[in-house]
Length: 217
Ligand code: IMP
Image 1 (cartoon, helix red, strand yellow):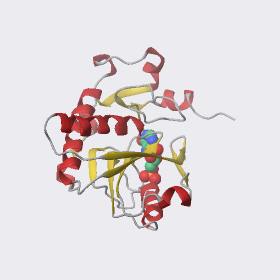
Image 2: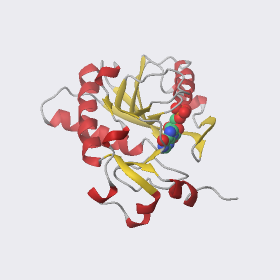
Image 3: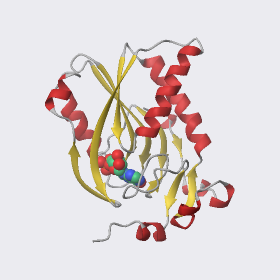
């Protein structure tokens, strides 16, 4: 996707937590709301429309767990609504991939849960991978390399977020919701050590939050 088509979220437009409903248990653990839930939903609707317009046939939509699950669920709903509104009908089948690449906020080793047997199902299909965030780009490049060995007809990637970071490997997905500053964000299923998935808005975690929810041995 051409970067001109992204929504560029800058640090100047972060909203005070007071302007939104934030679960009490997370108030002190966050500094600000970066992307309110309503804006996320509006953007997901647009991505769904673009995906449907460009789809060449049935899609195997692959959710990258766990962080991608909310984006995946909302995206699928909007693709289905497109049909009820008289838009192009695209048959969907759904797959789930577990990828673990992070412990805390540090980029760690990438582990994919895909077995070769599962990957064989992708041969000749049009695949759409749905991911929450591209940070260094390492996870996605490895996942794509693995999937391409199984000769799918096409593979496209939709990522809700892309982080502007100096450690990026330059990978850019086919569909991007928002480009965000180089901060660790949580909410809308994005986690920090499994916390904050139960938060609707995408928020910036505070130093207090990083410490409170750190893995302590
Ligand atoms: P990459 O391989 O560095 O691109 O990392 C991608 C994965 O790291 C994502 O699927 C997320 O699980 C995780 N990740 C990277 N940045 C963040 C963040 O700001 N918040 C939550 N998870 C993140």
